[in-house]
Length: 246
Image (cartoon, rainbow, N blue to C red; front, side):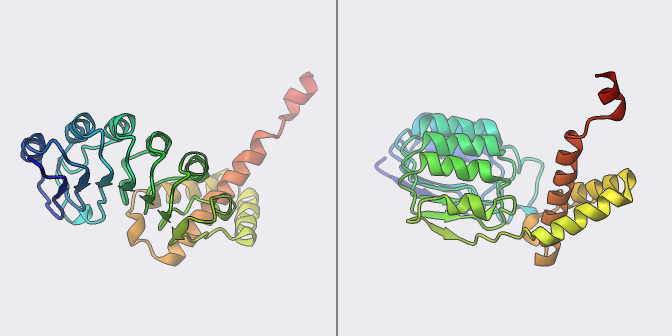
């Protein structure tokens, strides 16, 4: 087959058996679009990595799976993305928006191994400044970067990116005065209140970030930063007994 472009979008039962047979019949694919198609596993990503070393376009966006969840809808993870990273070095377009099952380590790996990336969509991926730093080092040809919902990325890190990159939807929600207020209150309130705050953040983290209101996201991020400050400062405090023993 001479087919180079394959699009299977908004298919909510795209099991491995269905897609593997299709891929094997199309050895010349350079453009794959699986936008909002779910159900396939790492087996498919591994097959893509093996069949298509010249792949240039890959869309794995999954911003609707919450409405079509099944017991097989979340079988892709870091292993599948790692296979893509190690094989498909010619990628120019990558969309993994809302793919929270991919950790920051695997996202950094694919950025590192795909220096030809020009378009990168990380909407609602759980990344930090570490990913932005990897982009700055590895993606010298990047032209477009979508950071919607990446609330753990700082303005300072984004400012260090190449000025030629069109950065879309970046919104730094950190408020220094609010973080300080949270930190001061939680220090005075004691461990019990700090643990309660951590519990609230853990429950919020299990919700869909896209469904959180703007005010809720602001509260969530600044409270998390305040707790981080408390933990960091406590790590530098030497217990009285320990200092006396010295």
